[in-house]
Amino acid sequence: MEEQKVKQDIFIGGNIRKIRESEKVGQTELVRRLQLEGVSMTRETLVKIERGTQHIRATQLRGIRDALHTTYDALLAGS
Image 1 (cartoon, rainbow, N blue to C red):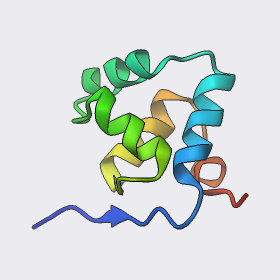
Image 2: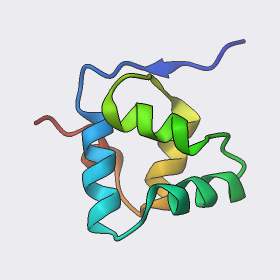
Image 3: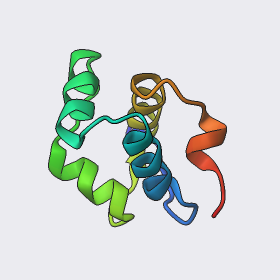
């Protein structure tokens, strides 16, 4: 069964970048944290997600939420 992907018509990528930067976490560091938790992601994938050119998987969204100590509400907030 293929994992569900979250559409990028909401501002998930931009929200991830804003939260990540406010936490002073670089892309490479965030990817390292995700990989330590067993979430499959490369820096290239994170760049595409932040730009809104790639859908994010539910497990990736959950991992980012946990790694950045944030909430789904913050990640899924509108503009």
